[in-house]
Length: 146
Image (tube, rainbow, N blue to C red; front, side, top):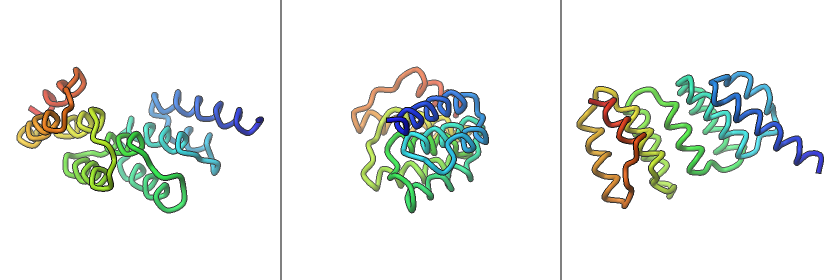
């Protein structure tokens, strides 16, 4: 019971820190006892400061040694990517592996599409093809690509 409480407390604190981009502090806090939530918090923290290489390493560690990444983990890693190509490659890889297409992933790719308006529009229209309705964030991502 104590260990569960400690894990919840650490993950909660890690989430608060990740919202502020304190990725080094998040990694130190969660240490070697990382579960899916811990990894995802770390991915969110590195995404806030666009540390894409660190996000790729964390995701790779999850694939080999840690808990299997989920949709949220992949979306956080996509948000860390700088540049449309990296973000698109990672998101497409997640989809090929069977992860759910969702508005968060699409919004991340739209936000990474700066100055790539054709690609952004293509992704925008593909949201409707898979039954997703754009929201304010995805619209803002599209506008940033123009």
